[in-house]
Length: 107
Image (cartoon, rainbow, N blue to C red; front, top):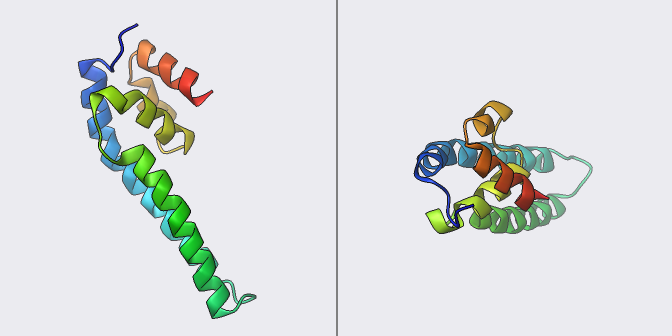
């Protein structure tokens, strides 16, 4: 097994990364909408809940998407996959080696 993602998987990952990022952001925006429309909580509590959500999700976004490099691609791809941001079809397009590493890292 090589220590970095191979070239074809790297190109595929770079193609899928903006799609996964958009899915992540859409999910967070949906969570914000759900929180903001909860009339059982005060405006302040909803604000605090949204703030805490954004802090947590921003850390997750940074871990999975910031500073994309071949040397960290497997780890980042495993994080992206752990959030369910790629379809089975999209994952199937990666080589068996990359899928195996991602399964191992995702645990």
